[in-house]
Length: 114
Image 1: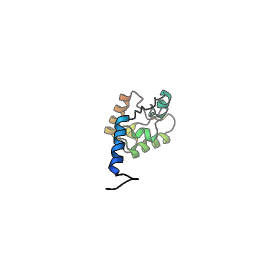
Image 2: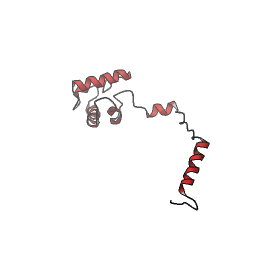
Image 3: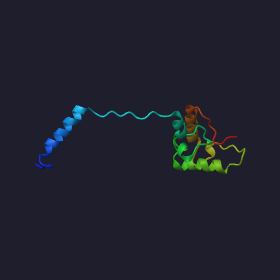
Image 4: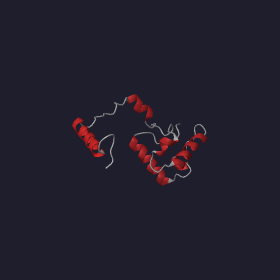
């Protein structure tokens, strides 16, 4: 059997296990969250302000569709209304899923603010 500094390794292993059991498991509590920090790092509420990363969290929107939605928002002239189905890769079914998810979140359904 392998020895560590003058004794069989199983004795050291057993001593460590006993020390762990006697001392108990260390208790760790996560730090309290500041509401301001949560608000700062939470996704934006308005789809007109959402980044590609925020839009990807919506159902049926992957990276390409979310990027296309942001690009459509950038290309739109002031006052234009861009519907979700006007975005490349988003059809009626995807639009319904996205709008339904936004309604459940209780936020605006518009991709661009008027």
